[in-house]
Length: 116
Image (cartoon, rainbow, N blue to C red):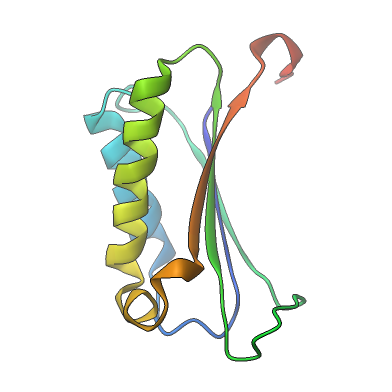
């Protein structure tokens, strides 16, 4: 089961409707044939209230995608780039303020070590 984890600081410049964000991410993963339509995805977000950035006005928005291993690396890179575009679309004001504050990580879960 794939996981999507969104984490951001409270001082972002946008109001996000989290279900819409996660639906857009899942729809893109289905469109790219990374996951099957109807495949359950565990989605969650964390508001990082305890954090340190040297620039007191700075913020961060990070998304982690975890998938069972075995997918083509080229497809995973394409997915990462497409999902980062969705992040920028949903966090438009933050993107205009500081696009370098965005990050997205694709992780592969070792099937042999994943217990469900």
